[in-house]
Image (cartoon, rainbow, N blue to C red; front, side):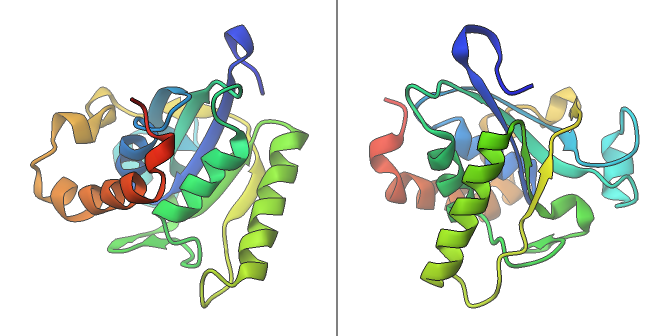
Length: 183
C-alpha cells in the first residue's frame, strides 16, 4: 500500500542496522512514525534470532510514515544514501550478512521511479568509488521487530554500539540536513 490515512506515505528502507536508520528518521521533518522491522524475505513472522542467521531473506528495515507535503520521498532517499554505504553488498561496517543489505522496497511505481532516478544521479555524480548495489524491489510485507528494538537509540543512547555507530551517523545527518530537522 502506498498511502496511509490522511494522505501520508510509507517508505520501507534497509541500510544496515535498523537502529541507525530509525534514530536518523526520527529527527527528519515531516516524518511522523518510524518502526524497525523486517522485510524482503520469505519467512513469515521472523524473529530477530532468525534474521541474525541470515537465512530468512529478510533485511533489517525501517518503515517510515511521512507527510509528503513536508518531506518528499526523494528527500527521504537523499538522507538514506547519506547515512549508509550503498556500495557494500550484505554489509554495513562490522555488520555482515544479507540482513544488512542496502534495499529500497517501493510501495508504488512513483517510488520505484524516484529510487531509480536518485541512484542514477548519485552514480553519475560519482559520489562513491564503487558502484551502488542498493536493491530496488517491490514491497510485499513488513514485520515489526520486537519491542526492545523500537526507539533503541532513544532508550540506549549511552550503550557502546549507539555511541560508536549511531551517534556519528546522527551527527552527520544533523550537519548535512540541518534545515530539514524537526524543530
